[in-house]
Length: 252
Image (cartoon, rainbow, N blue to C red; front, side, top):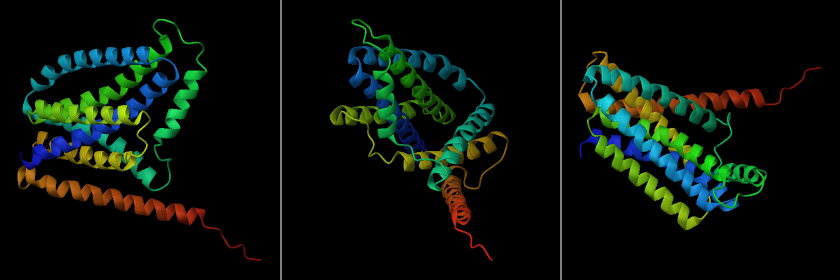
């Protein structure tokens, strides 16, 4: 496996693990509180929908000329990556609350309890909430798998990395029977934001005709530089926050 393929697999694995943890929290909340049968039915329906979306979009992406594909993929990765990175930087600087799976689970469980009586057959609330949660989180998984995989013509490798991530998170959830609050989700999101942004810059520039020194090896510089720039932003924001929060001496 080349360095570029390893980076692809690692990026997809981390991103999909984060999305799987968030989907698992929603499914656990409605499954434990209301109806496991209906919650799992919603998961199954969402999986079928995601499979259909993947089957429709995959061939369309891979059919694009490589230059156009890299511009499209690079732009999309930058959009998603910068969103992830912005939130991660704000969380690390203390300007945004950390993502807390336990708190989210309690909110979802409370909403499920207040949703009325559980239907004897298919509980509509459990089905819809599970379907929506898995579908929305799964769409990002599909996007990441297709963009990373199609650009390097390694959709299979990206799909395997995603499958391993989802399987491990699901297994951990089944064994723990509770939200995976101990997973360093905020750190993982920071790493994913850095990776998506770095690959977005790399492929977007290549698609526009730029030539990186050392081709794929330049990612060994782009990723650390993106990380350092992000950490520098965290430090600046923390200093600014401390300055604003510091008590001021009133002169008389």
